[in-house]
Image 1: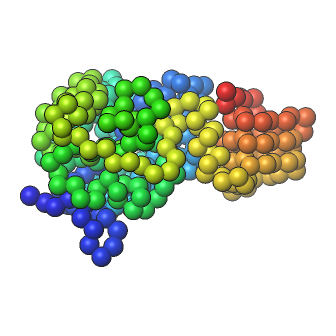
Image 2 (image 1 turned 135 degrees about the vertical axis):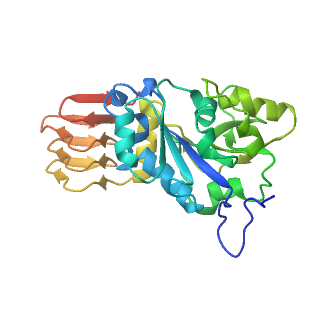
Image 3 (image 1 turned 45 degrees about the vertical axis):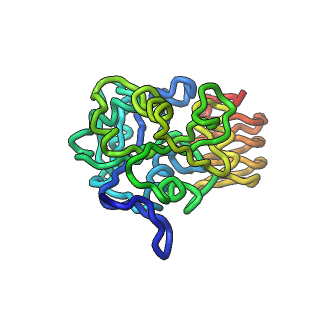
Length: 286
């Protein structure tokens, strides 16, 4: 049996018999109309798509490439496929299979390994050892683990709400069906009830980016109170504490806003806590 997540003269890295699955098949209904244009996994946070942030987090613990990392897709799946390319194994679902069914559908690819499951829509305000390294450290491969933040929502686990990342032993993964099922019912609650669930507190900010308010909050956290400019931004007006995507143009005023690539703000517009796409789509954070 492998020793999981032990630190040896440096950062924690994943062992050879652990793989990762990034869950990116969600419909993103609460984030519409933004997710009518892009799948939630590809909406930009600080000018970086959420999926790229997830892949970068996995890379920090040595999980990269299509043999070690898989991404599932459903809604606007062609966009996910084009974006992933050869960076990960792609699993396209004809119907949404949920968090557990997605793993059952990947049984052949998983091939008896343990799995680090990562929600693509998870934004965290920590990096390095405090992030996935903390989840891996000291894990023996037999217990179920999850990142958690102090409960502020219903149905916590040991007083913590799930924070977007979980470690599943190979034995727990092997019994998951390739049908619509959720890990909360198939794996996490049973593990909690039998005393086999460990919650590893996640320090710092965690947001699931599921609503316009949380999506804006994640972007403003990434900007850290300053303007964050993409390539080719034109600013003839005024911007304060905002994220401006590639090719955006501001002739008016924006404060605490997110502008998607190519967005335009006219001279007579004054946007506050808004998300602007193109010239006409404006989504309030409230």
